[in-house]
Length: 256
Ligand code: BV8
Image 1 (cartoon, rainbow, N blue to C red):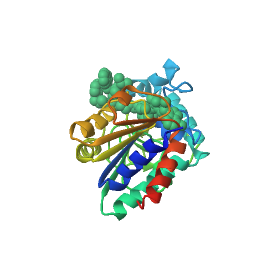
Image 2: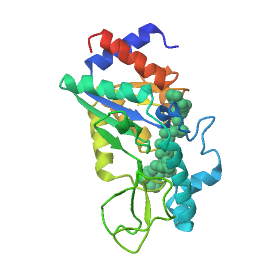
Image 3: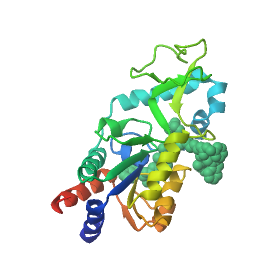
């Protein structure tokens, strides 16, 4: 339970924000039933799995890695956005409606923010519903909405190679344009909400510090304390699917 005065203070900042940024991680999707990576029920506790989410792991066994991703896609097919996703989409409407700017930067690859109605989304780690040619024969992305896939690995429709998931693996560069925009908006933000992330994976985890160094306010909303908690101006510990709607109720009460 977050103290009412803290909810009121953060909601006031959300009403005043003109350059708003949100950074989300797996914790935002947890209440939709999507497993997180490192939390107590994190599914990356099993070492093998972290080997799957690497280019080396993929090249060693594309079939096995695609089976794992398609299993995750199958799980995601059943889930819906939760009140936390919808609250962030609603806040975007109020900020933009006041003539402000809003960017939602996510490490999640599940597509749930878009499904909930968020518009200006920066997918730092890609999207599990898209694939691209392993050889890079084209910059085109192949949208693969149906799961299970007919064959593993799926063939590249543009050349005789195969497709790889359009996600960023450890040791891989993020999309330069998305990364640059994420750092630019974070450096200009008057407020960043950091929601549902263990704040361990870089460069994403560096974004709130960019906001703080530039004089913006950092609000963490997470189930448990993280390294960021000590650097944040506000650290609200609890479920994002409860805290975000509570904050939005207060924003609307304040005429946001
Ligand atoms: C790169 C793939 C250049 C897709 C993922 C040494 C020091 C610093 C950095 C590095 C280093 N060595 C290497 C690096 C760079 C490395 C990195 O950061 N490693 C860390 C782990 C040390 N980063 C990279 O490699 C990145 N590329 O930097 O390129 C480069 C290249 C080579 C060498 C150096 C630099 C690429 C990173 C992307 C990796 N891909 N996923 C997939 O299969 O999913 S990362 C994976 O972690 C997911 O994408 C995920 O989004 C991301 C972050 O995890 P979180 O979202 O935070 O999830 P997590 O489970 O950890 O935490 C959830 C939180 O939610 C918890 O705190 C929990 O308490 C909370 N929670 C749970 N339920 C709720 C909740 N909160 C609120 N409400 C709830 N209900």
